Length: 74
Image (cartoon, rainbow, N blue to C red; front, side, top):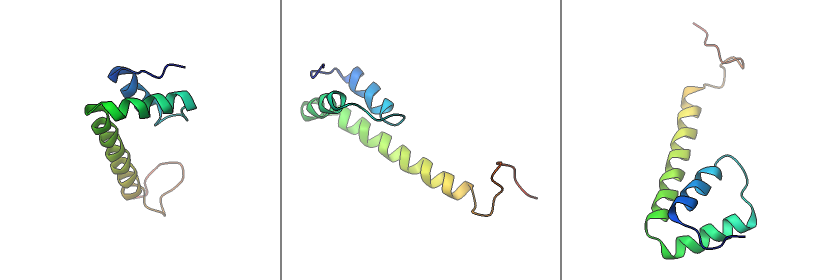
């Protein structure tokens, strides 16, 4: 278990955390790195903003009465 992470490792893990559940060692390594780094918490916050913006865009772009197959009615 690697606890001392580089910024490159942390940004990779933050992005991977969007697609899969991170392990305990990965999450701990990220938290420890975030305590000493100024840039990585900003990056994680930017990823969170993008996640929220994407979710809002999807909710706006896909009305509730839209067909499930993704086609649009005219």
